[in-house]
Image 1 (cartoon, rainbow, N blue to C red):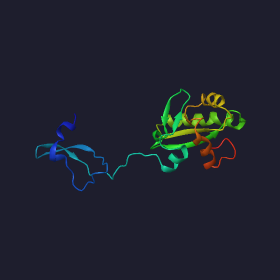
Image 2 (cartoon, rainbow, N blue to C red; image 1 turned 90 degrees about the horizontal axis):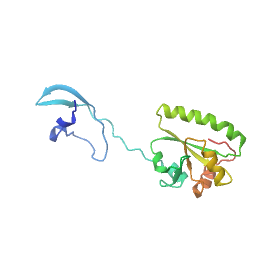
Image 3 (cartoon, rainbow, N blue to C red; image 1 turned 30 degrees about the horizontal axis):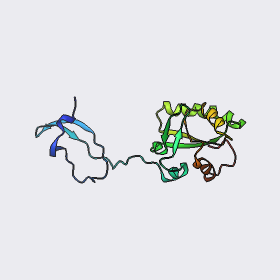
Length: 166
């Protein structure tokens, strides 16, 4: 049964709600009262929309910084809003990185299967774009574009002195 067709007009107005805040309500069957068949649960606390933290936004070069994946798809950094984000500094030429990356891929896949709001962003330390693209081809996550000035700056801001660095 669809409740929304019966939730109209002043019967659905709630008192003392802040207009700029989102609230969640649970509609449940109730006794027939004044012709209404549905009742509202008390309002939840205000719910805020997920936003990208200013720190992460700045680190990646702004909310519109371009992230790429191995399939050639692109998204902006703001698509990471509401997720736990791990930054992974790595390179194809690094032996320890090549040993650690498969373990990280397994962990990432487990997190995604569990529908956990988790993402990894690769900050490549490769020496050229061709190496970066080849290495990213083995990874299921996003990477800060190799040509982005923010990639080098990010590595400095998080004090990467050795790789792999998560």
